[in-house]
Image 1 (cartoon, rainbow, N blue to C red):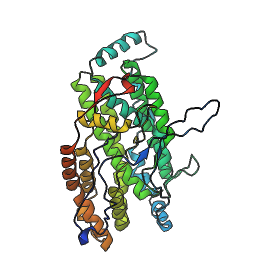
Image 2: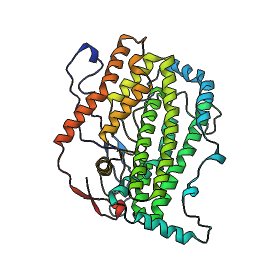
Image 3: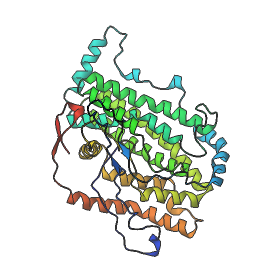
Image 4: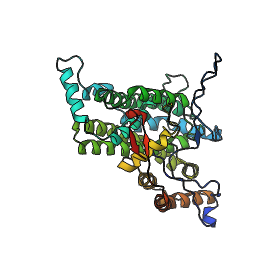
Length: 396
């Protein structure tokens, strides 16, 4: 899930407790990274130009974790087997997309599709835009597996490594893969959305990749995934609630089931960070502060449909307006994670670690105040077309 908020600059008075913060580092709690849309160049005459997808434009940093900390993750293999792999569900006991969809092999298939279309025909366009955005985010799963496999010490070195970290990443990917499959098929059967433009958006997004600023560092990587799993849990939970309000109980069940998966995955990633706080509190708090000083990049921030160069911002504005994922949720997630990891009560930090701790623990209230001011200054909404709903216009 994704959200683009109005730009905000953090401005705090200098004090010893904020030595970690330099003015150019204090960024908005908006959840997209600086990016540019590098679209496919049109051919000039017969000359063919190379394909250029939307891409990151910020400075990229790699391998920021000190090499000696690789041993931390090697030593956690047994712990991960006992604490992470047990959270995975056996395939034979897992739900599959077909459990929620009309059965194409049954004689009643066409009637089931007709009923699905009846349920969805009165659902507002703004809900469908957000549901499509959620589905596209899920469909970019190859990018997320790629990101996890950039992390030093936990990557799948062969593509079929027996290491616990690699087994977790592959099985997590397999579970997540069902989410986009299910939402994609449901949206297709509804007839309410332009699948061609949606499919183009997915292809653009996967081709663009993603650099969330995790720097091949599993400390940063698992903090990032903790945040993202919490965000998708909230988002899918809210689409479930709204689907129920709009009268589509089956769609509510679908979104709620996906949300439950995200919650289970959130549990796994937050357990990893909790363990890192236990064995390396100083290194972990510094990475948490570093991640939160950035703008947390939502997975689909390079979203593009071949037409709208600000598609992610516009989709996120609709999500904010209908209450699927909001500025408040961003601050709530940070506050939840700080409490989940008991950050305020941890001890044994270095001086730099204590300053990072103070920064992180005081950040959520500041984000809320700054966002309130930004929303008060926000411009009046305007109408913009969305290709996903055949060019119909929505308020953004």
